Amino acid sequence: MKLKLVTIAILMSSFCAMSQKTILIKNVQIFNGRDEKTITGNILILNNLISKISTTPIPSETNQNTTIIDGRGKFLMPGLIDAHTHIMMESMGITELMNSDIEYITANAIKSAEKDLMQGFTTFRDLAGPAGGLQKAIHRGLIIGPRIYPSGAMISQTGGHGDFLLPNAVPRDLAAGLDFTERNNFGVIADGADQVLKRVREQLRLGATQIKLAAGGGVSSTYDPLDVSQFTEAEMKAAVDAAENWGTYVTVHAYTPRAIQTALRAGVRCIDHAQLIDEQTARMLADKKVWLSLQPFIDEGKSLYADGSPNRIKQQTMMSGTDNAYNFAKKYNIKTAFGTDCLFEPEHSAKRAGDLVKLLRWYKPFEILKMATSTNAELLAMSGPRNPYPKKLGVIEEGAYADILLVDGNPLIDLNILEDYEKKLLLIIKDGVIYKNLLSK
Image (tube, rainbow, N blue to C red; front, side):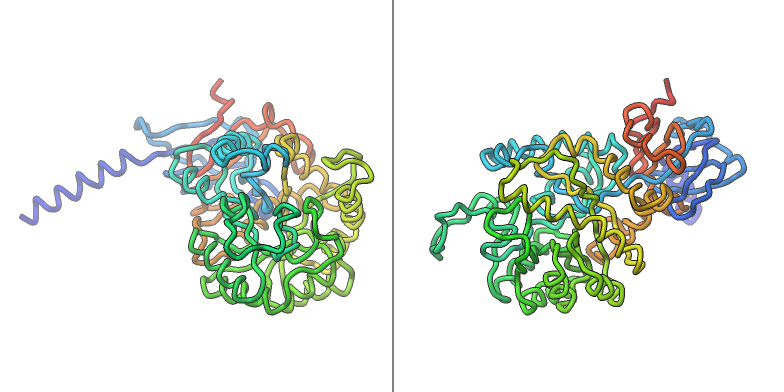
C-alpha cells in the first residue's frame, strides 16, 4: 500500500511539473524597479511569478510548456502602475457618460482596459466608479486589462465634488430614489458621521481595497468652488475608523491646505492631488508620513471646459499650483505616487505615458520610473489584508508577480520612448501571460 502511495505521489508530481507554464527570457538589460543601474541577465517565469533571475545562463526545460524568448539585449522593466485612475469614466466624454446606460459604459471600459494594458500599464488604483466588476473579470481572465485596486464609489457630502444630482434635486426627499451615479456606484452622498460610516461599510462590502472621500472642491463638479473644504473632521474620522477596522486606508481628493489638514487630523493616510498645498501643510504631510498621490496637471491650452467658464477657471487655478506641489514634495521628501487621473478624455487615456514624460519637469528618468513601479506598488500594499495581489508588484525580483515589459531603447536615458508604445514595447507580460511579443516575428 505504501509503495502504491509513493508511486501515485511521484506521478502527480511529474504531472504538475509538466503542466506548469514556464517562460524563459534570455539576454536582457534588467531594471528592477528600485536601482538605477541595470544588469545583463536572464529571467525564469513559473506560472505567474518570477522564479529566478541570474546573470548566468538558466537551463531551460525542453517540454512543450516552456516558452523561450531571446531578449536580444533589450531593456526589461516592471509593468507600469497608475495610482489614480477611473477606468469606467476614462473613455467617454462627460455628456455621453451621463446620458448612457451602464451596459454601454461598461462595454467602453472593457475596450479601454485592453488598450491600457497594451500601453504597458499592468496595474491601476481606481479611485471612483464601479470598477469592481471589471477587476473580477480581468482577474479571472474573462477580459484583458490591468490589475485593478478598486475604491468603488467616491463618497461625497451634499454639494461636494461627488454630488452630480440635478440642480432641482434639493431639498432632497428622503423617499426619493437614488440618482444614476449613486445607483451605479460612481459616487454616493453622505452627510454626518453615521451616513459616512454606512457608505464606507457598503463600499468595503462590495470589495473596495481602499476608500476614497471628496474632501474639497473639484474642477469637474458644479456646486463646489475650488477653495471649499468638505466633510468635517468627525465625518472623515468615521471613514478612517471603518477602513482601519477592515485593515485598509482612506485617501481623499483635496487641493487646499485646509482640506488637507482636516484630513490629516482625521487620520487619512493618502492625499490625492494637493496642487494648492502650502509649505506648512507639506511639512505636516512629511511629519505624519502620509502619502501624496500627485498628478502632473499642466495647462497646455487645451481643455474640456470653455474658456472663461467656471470649470475652466477652477482648472487653471488648480494647475497654477502644480509646480509648487512637486517642489514641496521633493523638498520635504514626501512619499510621492504617480497617477494620471484620466477622466472624460479618451485622448488622454490613449496617451497616458505622456504624463510620465511631463514629470521630467521635476524629476530624472530613473526617479520617474521608480515612482511608476516600485514606489506606486508600496502605496497599493497599504490595503493590507484587502490587497487582492499580496505578492510583490512593481519590481523584477524572485517571488514577484511576472508583470514585465521589454522595451526597444533605454527609458532611463530617453523616457519619451514609452509614448511610442506600439513600436517600442516589444513584449508585454502580465501575471505570467504574454499579451504582446514582437520578438517572435
